[in-house]
Image 1 (cartoon, rainbow, N blue to C red):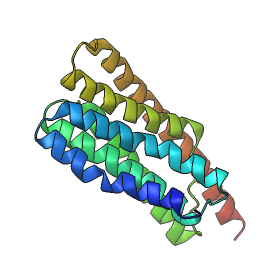
Image 2 (image 1 turned 180 degrees about the horizontal axis):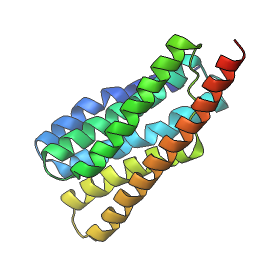
Image 3 (image 1 turned 45 degrees about the horizontal axis):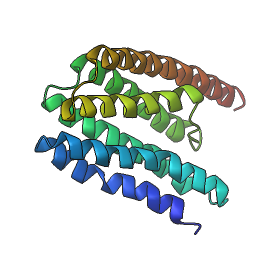
Image 4 (image 1 turned 60 degrees about the horizontal axis):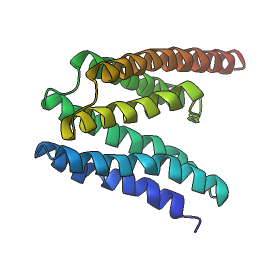
Length: 182
């Protein structure tokens, strides 16, 4: 039972391939259902890990990787189908690349990087899931007012920028503190 949360996280990574195939063939209804199922595993793995007292360093690393694989792969496919705005994709990619590079530099120059998601970062991930689901639902079933999707796009942008600034500020303080102690 202690490995169940990590197995659920791995299932999210595995589900990326069928989601992408469904998007490639423009099977939006099926893609919506499968993406929703994969999205729900994001909360489920964390809840089970805490309930089973099975939190682990592996799980803390796999979970954001699984999220990024599902979200970014879906965004790339939606972008190629001209269903996702390029400006938002670029903002998200720049944020993620800069934060990843900062984490690598921190680990290489100071000490082991311990990723700790913030509430705004969790909200950002949640909104990215909601945005993709909204786009898929709109394509599959229609009837969703597109202005609602645009509002979610704006919220994703704002939370991306806010979480970026929060991480940069927090880890810059940690780095300055580490350097001053040497």
